Amino acid sequence: MIMVLAVVISAALSNNFVFAQTYGICPFLGVSKKTSSAVGMGAAVTVVMVVATMITYPIYMLLVALDIQFLEILVFIFVIAALVQMIEKVIKKISPPLYNAMGIYLPLITTNCAVLAVCEITSNALVSGAWEPAIIAGVEMNFGFSVLYALAAGLGFTLAMVIMSGMREKINHLSLPKALQGFPITMVTAAFIAMAFYVFTMVNVNVGG
Image (cartoon, rainbow, N blue to C red; front, side):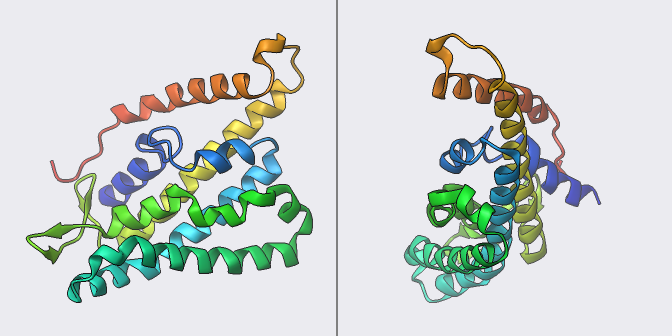
């Protein structure tokens, strides 16, 4: 249970991909204007993170065994792109309004560095030329923990999107100086939220001592 908690806190809070590691900033800023679209984007990114991790984890071990691990980024991007295409078609079929709200940012999940980062972090650990599980918060990232890390990272990304969208919806009703309207106030808001998330970096759950 402690190991599970360590992985979840690390991925979702203390090392939040948006506020701590600044991954996935483009969709974070572009699709966080409304809570509904923010939740949809967060859910889509979470699904891609989890499924991509499930696929790329064994693929990376195979690449290492074949001594062609230098192709990992290319292979990972192909896997992510295929998943995004499938999810895009599903969302377009099930919820056209959500599909339209996401706009260009939905296919751009393919190049969302947060998704690629999850695959890299959970699989990329070479020791003396051989593959060994990566270690996060003192936990060896075997297949199960890697999927859990991807899920928690996706939930952390969704949390960041929802918080930001809620703040932006409230800001839209404020009377702001012209110099702060639009992008400036958005960045100021994101900075304050990131400062709040900094509190979680003080929570050190490390089962490795």
